Length: 313
Image 1: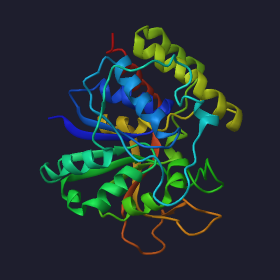
Image 2 (image 1 turned 180 degrees about the horizontal axis):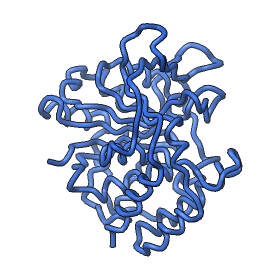
Image 3 (image 1 turned 180 degrees about the vertical axis):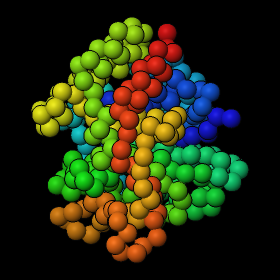
């Protein structure tokens, strides 16, 4: 039986690859909807980008919903310096045929979960957690229908990538992250600690490009652009594929390993706003509220991704 999921994202090249991976796997994943949020670029671009990705994947009937255009409390921070002005620089931008639904993303999440069976839907947020948090605040009863939340965000050993101590998604909306991590549901966290271990390389991008279909070509072109920032920043050949780790975990959990921890989000300190305080060794005695993924079979990850991209025509 396929897993019912809602993907909440802010495309972003790595979000785009996560969407391709999910759209390639209908036997395992039933995508109830794609919701978008302001993050890597403003909302008008993230919702457009999600629809462009659906078009490229020939999945034009996928439901796409626009959500929140700013964080709950703090001002919006975006990442055009990483993703380019469009958010998905590296491919041509066009007016997508995939329609944008009129319903607000938060309302879609609430309505879908209210009508669902207990523990039946997995949420997969790969951007700031604004939409998810506001859905929980709007109607806490929806928590009964959520099986788990598999998210990309946070950092412990790898430190921050937007500030010295905060990962981008957590820093963009720390108050939303706090709501989500305190909601009491099973949370699987794909932090920088693991995503920095799934690096692209010239060889891996070349293998993707050699597949020769429209999706693999778009993926390769986006990754060539995306890699330039992290290659310069970290002095590596390639870039971490953050967001696809969430989908890869759903498809093959054996690729990953982690540990149950208590994770808290800093919302007060200007210095460490958005920091994920991970009690990895349980020194504070708090009950674990998340599974902190820390290791991955990176070759297995890329084998999975490349094999799934071959499914497109």
